[in-house]
Amino acid sequence: MDDIIFCMDNFSIHLTPLPRRYPHSFPLTGIGYMPHKKNWMRNVFSSVSFSFILKGEGNYLFRGREYPVKAPCVVTEWPSEFHEYGPYREWEEFYLMYAPELRPELERCGLANIDKPVWYIEDPAPCRQKIAEIAELREKVHEQGCADRIDRMGEALILETYLREKKLEIDHKAAAIRSVRALVEAHCEEEFDFDELALDQELSPSSFRREWNRRVGLPPSKYVTVLRIRKACRLLAETNLPVQEIAESLNFSDPLYFSRKFRQIMNCTATEYRLAHSHTMSISDAGG
Image (cartoon, rainbow, N blue to C red; front, side, top):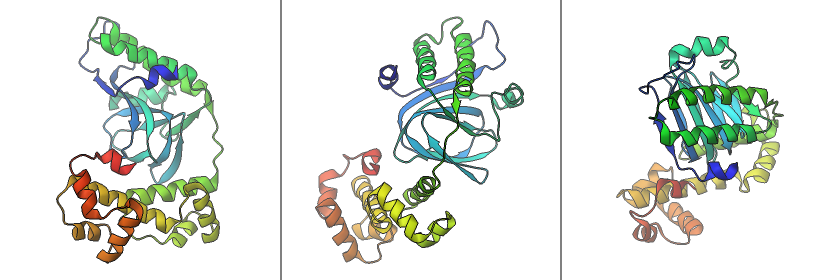
């Protein structure tokens, strides 16, 4: 069943205007699929949504709490609430969206619980099967009765995840590294006190650095430098900003230090990189 999912391209379908011949308690407003989602969500949602994370890992911050996202799992979004979540590199996601006024009924039926915004799935195969069946209907979405089928299949998919739920044993050290890494990747141009961040995660600085090096492969400070150089690559290729301005925006106060680090990591100068890659590199390439 994985092959069926992997061969699908991105799609998003708006279902609200489609007529229902057999109205259902939980009509969907939209469905979508992203096989390689890389961006983070940082906004207030206007719907009740269920995001099925089928592959990949990331982080989810909601109401002051942090939840590890480890596929296969389900992440929920709530209307009028701020959410911040996304993958460390990328993940595979299928989502269902419902109108905000359905929230009370979804909660009453046990299909949604704001105190349980993330849950994990023991066996994803049946869920993938249902997602593939829903996806097959997207080509017939305007046919009579198709929207009715999708509505019911969406509810069945949510129920399937609860029936196959598992308890995730959270490794505190791993969760701490994920949290700090997500912070660094989102704000690489800032300065970080990693000893202070370690203590915030209830780890000693030495334990944090040992665990970080084991999982990431580079010391924290070197990792930040690599992230900044990658971002510099993107700016060099996609903008006409002067090299010195790019360096300063990434917190390289010494242009010579920036030049030296850029050459060490990229094996060329910033100017040479711009000449070779200007207008040819995508944002995702720069971030990878």
